[in-house]
Image 1 (cartoon, rainbow, N blue to C red):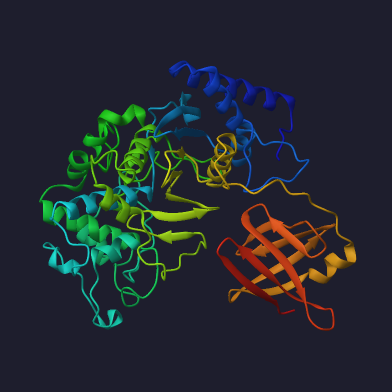
Image 2: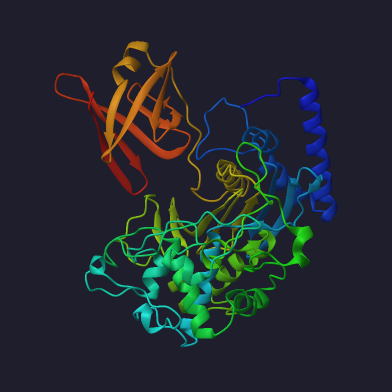
Length: 497
């Protein structure tokens, strides 16, 4: 945990943080019971497990550690918002604090609300999830080629990232840039700053995340409904849910100017112009705040329970959060792709969830599928790690069943044994290394360095990954690899040198 190098820096930050706490509390006073839960969350940030004997992590410390200017948090309990608070600065230059009304770019969470809108049109008979997308498209047609192998792409493919399309994400455009049309983006024609959205392999073969596919669904909505996307979303989603300031309008409305957070990179520098513009609205263009996005989470939970149908019926809401097909494997063993959200299993509980990332902004929501609890978080920073730590703190404070592993006792392992583990390994066909620094071992993979904590002479874990790992030996007693176990997933890594 990083510490300030001088007492004056610590004092300045303390005064700043206390001022923001007071500002947040001035918006709404909480009962003592709720305040106790808030205090627990603020003082128990953690990874998926905690090492026994290590001190608790505080929100103040982690915001400082990750250089996070501002964070806005909502906790959902019993199908309603339990509390909402903002911390830090929406804009550090003007000393404008984050409050519960501050708007953030939510990145790919835009796809979840887009999926909700698509299913509402399916429910109304305006769209067909299984029909060839070119049957819906009017202003542009998807150019099938030999890579699609004669198979047609459906709306369900677009929403579940199983269309075999290019275009993982979009960088956005700086204020003052010439903004391309949707068709220019899909064709990769200047002023578009991304490549054309085309087939990379046949649809319904496997999972491959594609913001490009979501952008096609945006054009389908515009073509079928004959109105600008942001206007359709206002009338269809935001007005019924009371999401008054949330908007897909790009650039954002001048009426919301004083509510917009400023985006910051990981090095603390401001995003030029304060934020980027995303004409790929359905994929990355939503501005919202946690309180309003929580209205969406709660509505889905209520619909799943058969208690509300403002947008979707119980049957259609169930289809929305249900894995599209379990054969489509995402990069995360516990996640299965649904129709705009991911279906995540943690312990015996199922959640619908999505993360978001735009330039200078990160966001996350998670909602229980069978019960009325969850959380929504947004930051104006590129440091997404704090979001997981806060969610874990919420799970700890609210006793989410099986969401966290019990605290772990770690041991010190003999230096000679540690030396036998050092080397290069092949993990899921990808190279990785284990290195020794002093008397500590670290995993190095994709330029990421993670400390190894041992619970026995052969078993270890990393705080960054919810997995348990055990080294293996050959018949001669020489280390030949390790077994990696994550819930629902197990694989073996081979030591190659």
